[in-house]
Length: 142
Image 1: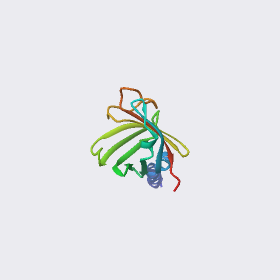
Image 2: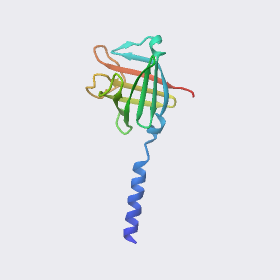
Image 3: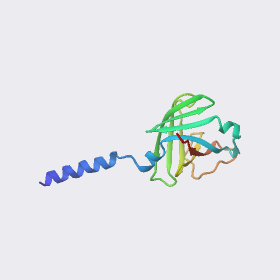
Image 4: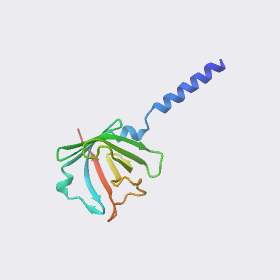
């Protein structure tokens, strides 16, 4: 009886661990940038219109004017601010890893990437002289 209890407890714990965090489900989808800054400089609206982001079960796909960049992403919703790691597997960022932070509010996703790959940003700011890329996305209505 005692052994059955511990076995059931272990199975319940493993099932709970296998369940993805709520944010992991919520970030999935297609996104378009509303505004973005790189190194403290805003990206022009004409450039923003060329960009799209798709997140799906740990895989990402970015299109910039039809040119694709693909890879993997992971999130850490428990860190403060919430953390993200992006690793390119195809395209211009193949083999590169970018630490990031994110904030998800409904159909708005804000991400601050360190394109230098040095370290996870501490706040949602893009500062002149850095490779911090701050983007606010809206969920595309499918």
